[in-house]
Image 1 (cartoon, rainbow, N blue to C red):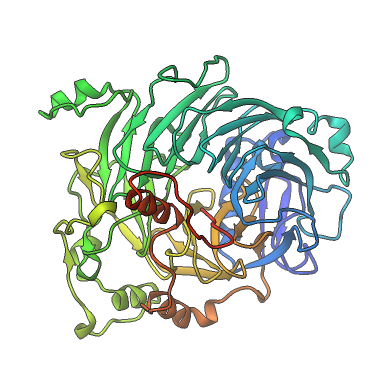
Image 2: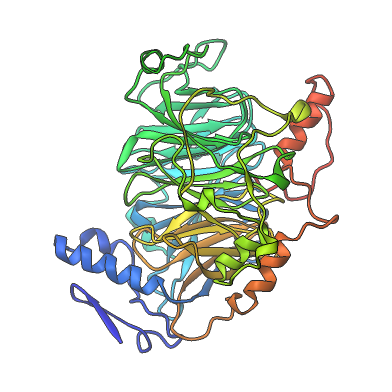
Length: 533
């Protein structure tokens, strides 16, 4: 069986001895090949077809002997059109991984090409390279955003020396330290600009940074935030197709869609709402929420991950702590509810739906649309009361999101699949259109937090509590790391409530609770060795 894209043939059995159905090509080739529109469509269709196969692990980046990271890997992102994989974590370093072109034995021979000693004083949660540049922005638990220039490491003479790892000190590479935030900075996201990027913090703000200007982060001199909301924020996403829109979420039952084209006061007055106090520069135009299961009414909500579709610009996935992953659309009207949100659903029913098993009638209970009861000191008010609420189109279950903060993502050139890490050390892949489980794969010895698909190749990078990064790619043969044979047992274990499970609050919530209990004064809190996100 074979599929062709331009002059490239992708064979299922003869391309590699391990049976991986893809050609061995550096991703930089995709930037130079003169693809026509038709050829590009064929390439994307072929990539989608190949990703439908079972994944297998093809490489491990780092080891337990000092090569690579020495702590949890919390940050993963592909840069330069997929030529570079950025990683960062608890060891406060950022690493740039590139394929070693002289290695013709490994399928994807990524090597650590450069390591940046960032100078951050706490865990790095996010790292992104700005487009068309050699600059990298990082976000960390020390409340700082830092910007580094790695042009020297990416110079052609250094790139040619594949086996040489360049080590950059803070003084050599750091060009900007931004202290606009007052709490941990969880995410940075880039736009189609080498100078502009956004940062999101647990202080409840989203800020835009322009490297063409400078300011002193003292007093009230920092620029006005784009978003200012009354609770902790954990995650942010925007789509290159609709860069004027962004979705943010955190310690709240809702994800919030903001539109930078609208002035806050004008739009709210059109809705007949009193403008909320605050100085933010953009407007919330939608809230994404779901009806809560009755058994979860007394639990505070936390959305740990969100992602906007890069292929259509309107689909959004949100990952709820101690719950599932939900699919929304920015095109849906407020109070939109499809059959999924109307029908009776329980943990057992969701498991059997994902596995295509009929649920016994007596195991069903109803959803509750009523708001939950107050949650003591940790409960938060809705940051945008009165805004239209959009209900989900679909729910994806089976993974477990309690111990650390899980991100969520789409996979495939048309975002055909939804993926998330899990507390059981696996990552899950669901078919987006149906919600059916597509794959379960062992990605970490403890917890998987991050799953990032390559923009052009059938390659998936996974990280979590381990100090290493795992790479997965489709195979036409058996997969040593697929857990689909144990799918029902794994999903039942993940959904079973036990007295020995991790506390549902992540470390950020524990620290917040401790601060509240101590009247806001800093105190010492005993936390696990690897705090993840």
